[in-house]
Amino acid sequence: MVATVISVLGALTVPLVLPFSHRFGRRALFRGMAFTAFVTTILVAVYSNKPVFDHMHQKRLFVLHLENVRLFFYVPCISLIAFRSPRTSITSTLRPLTVPLVSKTSFKILCKNSVFLNSLLFLSSWTTTTAIGILCIRSLQYVLRVWI
Amino acid sequence: MVSQYLVGQVDERTVYTSMLLLQAFFAFALQLVGVGSAALFFLTGLPLFVSLIVDPLFSRGRKELSLVTYFLGQTLPLTTGTMLLMGTLDFFVPLVRGYHTLTQFKS
Image (cartoon, rainbow over all chains, first blue to last red; front, side):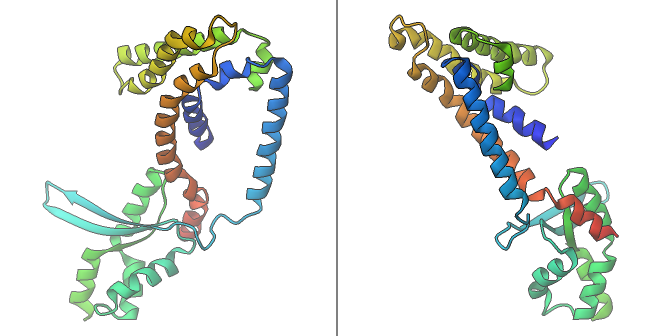
């Protein structure tokens, strides 16, 4: 599906390749095909040997805001995307933010039992993204009230 | 390119004009259907049209089209297409392995 979208957009981007391919005759077109196929094969071979997640891989932090206007209920959430290891990442990333507030154990429990984890994971998988780890600030408030 | 190879030798000018016809048809059809906006096809078709109009100035009676025509016709589609591609690639490229990490997370 992704390849189809990319090729359609590519065809929109360079529409004049088609008339240009007829400019120099059939023999030159065959050479062009062979060269393009060669370059593509080499690129595929190189990139298939590389790991997808290297240390420079971009990581995204989304601040989501869910609001139920009927119940006047709103949930601010933090979502991390494109992390290799979800649990450790969310802990290590959000730990500095929450050190003064929550103890280590309750933070783990919070990450494990967050009610909004599942719903937001569903939302993100529906939009074909993957929300790897989610912290709900409302749960944080709950934890603060209960455990501290 | 493979498709063009299979089609065989066609006049360059014919293919250029048919690209313009194709973009205009897409724009017109999408406008009639009324889903979304046909501006993208218009933005692709307009420079093709303009460059075909000014082509006799540059090609000076030769059989093939001038390279200036190609340049003029390609600028706007390249710009809009690149802007579209950047957003799409930004969304898809880092998340190729995302599904696997999601399944690991659930299990």
